[in-house]
Image (cartoon, rainbow, N blue to C red; front, side, top):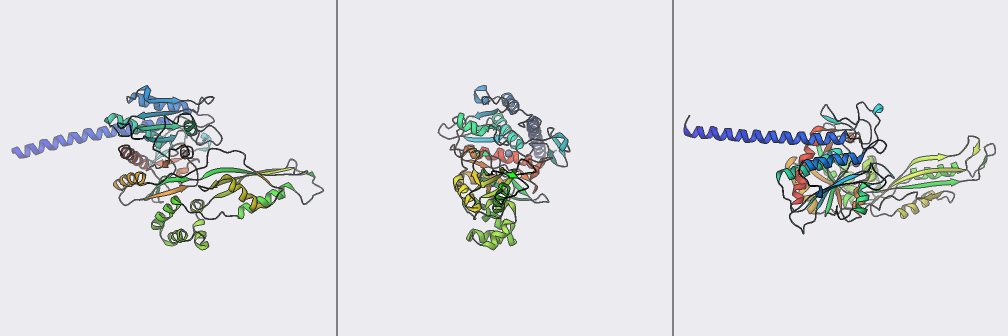
Length: 470
Ligand SMILES: [Zn+2]
């Protein structure tokens, strides 16, 4: 061996061992992430039988092992809700003038019955390239990534400019139960104070073959509001019918709702969405998007988009009948008939305006419309600034060259509905790409692609790092 080749061989050997060590560390780090994810999925956090406080305590223990002092984290348990607790934690930034960023995730899950599922919903199962289990997609993958981020940053000795905060909360999935994000906004506003927050809501889109179509970012969502339609009547014997019948009044009112479409509304978020998607989907749908953006009352184009339930919902307020009850005996004229109408209100529209519109549509004074419960403030949009978008585009283009980043309006709702009004604009971004079937979230056999979770982990790790050094 010449001296030169000896040096070359030595350098190569050093390089090899350095890269082997690096990859062993990467493997260990990925395994630890998988353990965190598994622990979260396998901690039942349904409202009926689960325990969010336990899941929060387990995540706190992980942070403690990683070196976080007790003074930098807190398991919080709202009064009277012993099992609906959560966790807040912080990695302190170096610049006292830079506002923090908040990583927010709900750790509760929708109910799941073992007998209905093919596999145990509370065991993390890997099969055919998927993780199966309740919460694998909504949203324990992202919750685990947030915890993992904090652990990795500390391990690396990363000193961000801004503080990086974590909030794991309970109660997102249960209508009417205590909402942890809302509780924090009301009771620990200072501790979660941040310039902006990041959470779930929309994912990356895959086509049926698993090809990446677009990475969505949620900037805006609708407000969910129930309206109760009620008709009362003196009733009487069913052998002597009269036209003034509570069921008939109600059914006619509900029928009118079924035929009514709220007018198309365009704002920053759905404009950005349809502008971006027009290029991606092309064809008749793409042309219809471009046409509606130019002229929101272009009926033919609106009709084309309305065939897709997502696009239909993104264009306007929607109201739909979800529950019905009437009558008290098979042989009596009904004394009472009730329907629940669930509306998803477009940003910027008030609950009262929708109520007035519903009254106008049904045009029957016998039907009383009331708001049974107001949950949280009206949703307001998070501004889509370059400060938010640019880092997302940077990491996305590094990881998935050519991918389109598409802002969107979410017809459903996330915990951003509680943080936006509290002055912490909160965006939905996961970097996790999901199948067109949505991964059966809230349904049976919830699942997510293993590769998608691991890519999402890399994406969010880099993204939060970029934000925190802004
Ligand atoms: Zn969720």
